[in-house]
Image 1 (cartoon, one colour):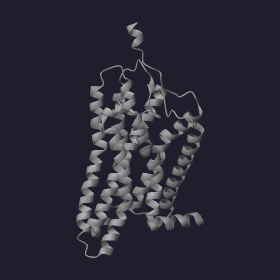
Image 2 (cartoon, one colour; image 1 turned 90 degrees about the horizontal axis):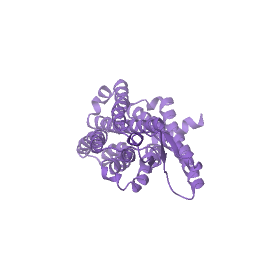
Image 3 (cartoon, helix red, strand yellow; image 1 turned 30 degrees about the vertical axis):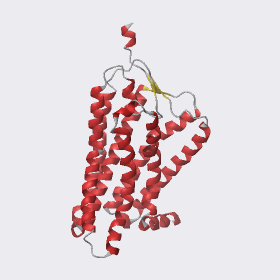
Image 4 (cartoon, helix red, strand yellow; image 1 turned 45 degrees about the vertical axis):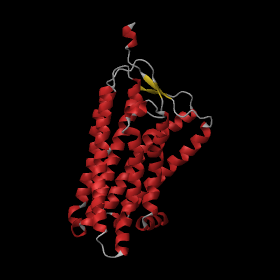
Length: 305
């Protein structure tokens, strides 16, 4: 009997949202998904085909848009499928794969946002040396470093989580395989895993955010030294979109993952998760295009072609 109780689960069940208007939610989130893919692909195409945008700032933006497409595609198609099906089971391997790619792409985005802040720091604080410091090769190296950081940091974390025994309940109180509700299902002492989650979260959230914070402290210090108000306004305008994106992404991610006690009251975290999983990837194309006349004009030129 004891041996039977220790049998590893072969699948999980995603509770999702217990709303009565599933077809309506399906329509809303399908439109969001379509808009997100279209907006981010437009930014990728605009930066790729417009030579004037082949500068590090826009190359980082292209990498961010590519990340957003993959990021939302890890969770939203599955959520759309569950709106229309009563069977919400997901295999053990499928759940592990979804969580891995979710963590991998989320980590990548954290580091990309940090390197974008560093790019703005160099551009504003060291304008004469900008083209020497932030070359296209350096931009490619930093973007690649963001992806590699996500690949390896997430691989270690997911391997640790899915080495736990799961032998009782297989119901995940979420719309995707997220790390906190999965750890909650383990039939073993998860204190070490919670510490590992906290360490992992500390590496991928506060560490890049510290680089962003230091960059913007230096930026503000330099901008305040500019004598003309027009010059100060122009310098700050290049950072507005990035600051908005950082605030939205890091704010919601911090609330969710740096408070492991949210495991006990996880219902509210499902709603918060929608912000950085669904709405931020949708808003980023708007944030970066509406506030940047260069991108807007290049987009219109590309559409006319």
